[in-house]
Image 1: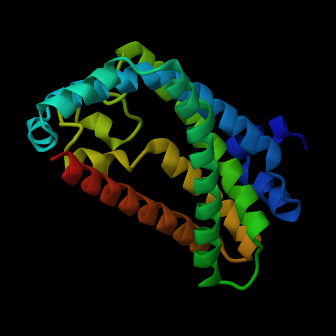
Image 2 (image 1 turned 90 degrees about the horizontal axis):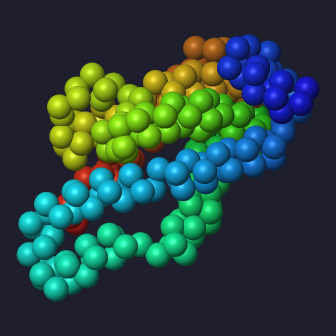
Image 3 (image 1 turned 90 degrees about the vertical axis):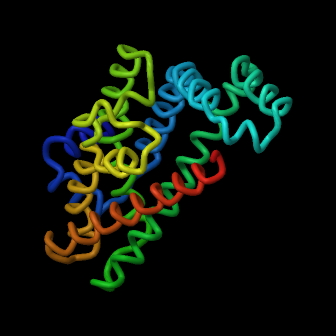
Length: 235
């Protein structure tokens, strides 16, 4: 089974595909594809991210008072005219590096949660399953997000989560951030991951889904906490 067959299988026949991955874990090809896709997505959407962020920061009176007008103006000027090297550094180095570290840590936590229910399974098996499950979000999900971002010319106003049902909600509100965690592609991702955990940990699907979605809840809580810390800094 080659990469394209496994990718197809993750989408249309996840049960058999993750059974095969549990028996023979592979991940390098999928990781390379994901990192390339994420780099392209970040590079293409960065102008819109910068525009949205700039509009948000320019309205932040509290931050301006805390930094002082001169420092604040310098920061805004730097955001208006980012260097090409900084754009490339973020797209080609920082983003894929952060993504890879995130995959490594997430797989370790998933294995730890799995140990609460079973003694079977190895880290490389969980890592392989998690990487392949992420093809759903990082390839299919980002493809749709890229289309929406290009159409609306905005990142902040684009979502594939429950937040789309509340188009007038402020994107910097806690409610919006919490709703944005319930992303349709993320729900799909952790659903198919349950099949992988079933074969890796040798537990029933119900327990595997409990572990998979339990991790999703934990990840969502961390994201919300990071948002709160960031907003407290921005004032």
